[in-house]
Structure formats: structure tokens, C-alpha cells
Amino acid sequence: MRFSFLKTNLLLTTISIVSGLSAADIKLTSNAIKEGSVLTNAQVFNGFGCSGENISPDLNWTGVPKETKAFAVTVYDPDAPTGSGFWHWVVFNIPADATGLASKAGNEKGTLPQGSIQSRTDFGKPGFGGACPPAGDKPHRYIFKVYALKDKIPLDADAPGALVGFYINSLKLAEGKLNAKYGRK
Image (cartoon, rainbow, N blue to C red; front, side):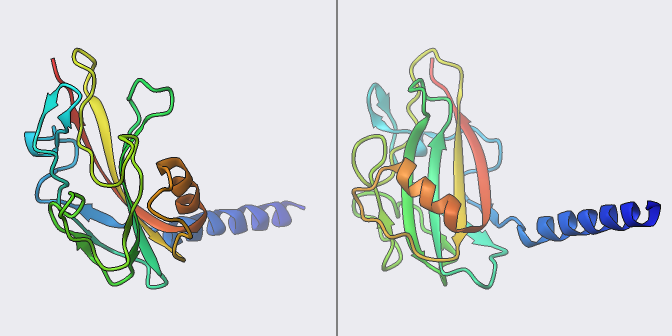
């Protein structure tokens, strides 16, 4: 009996360790944003009382699983006073050979890798929408994520962030993230 119990625990521990190793994180970096930093005026929205430059930052990734078929990138503010957060940028079906996105790729005249789709953000249209929390609110968190996917997402540019997020979670092989914050007085 005791041997069987130990054997079962050893097996479960091994499975946990192997599962953790197979879900390795992607390393996500940016020249414009450092982990835990405050966003600069370049990544602040221009509208709704904010007067930023609304430039999507460069994002670069390494440590991608070899079975990756596509990538997705999102920027999400969980602190927005909406009850459901706020999607600031949603890009999916980025080709598997991409290693990042250039600065301004999410802007109106930006260049994304061919086949990439920017879908509707909570600003109501596709493309990057910078930070713009309510004046006087505590600084909000902005979570920049890249996801390695095992297949392309079967949606178009009219898909809302939450629906894209559903597909991301069902197709995700690995992810990487950068956290930044921004507040205004």
C-alpha cells in the first residue's frame, strides 16, 4: 500500500513538472516599455481628455514553441471602470515566422506582417488605442501580451477583444507579457 501511494505521488509530481516545462513562457521585450515602467506620452491615447501620441510600441519575442502556427498580441487594462476591463489592442494571425512588431505597427498607417488582423478594440475600431484612464483614478495596469498559437483564429477585423481572447485561450501554446502602468491627475 505504502509503495503504491509513493509511486502515485511521484508520478503526479513528475507530470506537474513536465507540464510546467512544456508551457514555457515566451520572452517579450520592447525598446519603448520596460517591465513595471510607467508608459510615456508616446503610448497615451489622443482623445477622451488625453493628449498623447497614441503610438503602438515595438514588441519583440523569443523562446517560441516550434509547433507555433500563428501569434496574437493584446493590450488589456484590467483596471478600467467598465466592470470588464478595456481592450486597447488586439492583433491576431500574425505569421509564425514573425519575431515581433515594429513601433507604429498598430497605427492607422502602420505596417503589420502580411496576414495579420487587427480587430475591434473597446475604442470601437481596429488598431492601437493608447492609455487614457480617468483623471484622478489610481494608475491603471496595461498588460501587453504575445501568444504563440497552435492554429490561426477564424475571425475577422470586426471581432471584439473578448471573442478573440476566447480563441486565444483555446489555441494557446505559450505566452509572454510586459506590464506597465499609467495614471493622470
